[in-house]
Each structure stands twice: as structure tokens, then as C-alpha cells.
Length: 41
Image 1 (tube, rainbow, N blue to C red):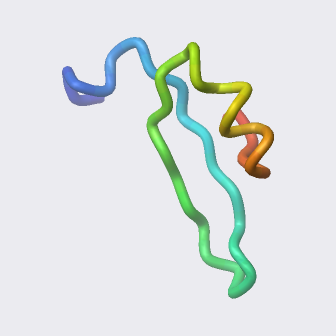
Image 2 (image 1 turned 180 degrees about the horizontal axis):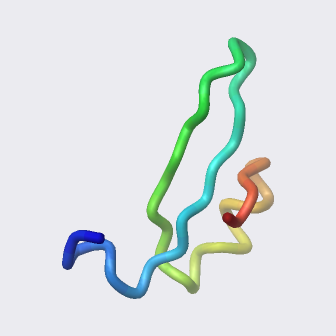
């Protein structure tokens, strides 16, 4: 885990083509990303 990703939550979703999209999300933004359809790992 890189330093810049410390304290962040890994979230991911599958797009329409079945690709995995992964994001490192700050904890206070998790709910907003969940609203976009991302799943917390």
C-alpha cells in the first residue's frame, strides 16, 4: 500500500463491459461513491 493511499477505502465496481474499476476513496467520501454504484471492498 502506497503512502498516499493510507487512510483510504478501496472501492470498486464493474462497468458495462465487465471491467473492474477500482478507486481509493477518502473515508468521508465513501457514501457518495456508494451512491454512484461502487462497492466497498
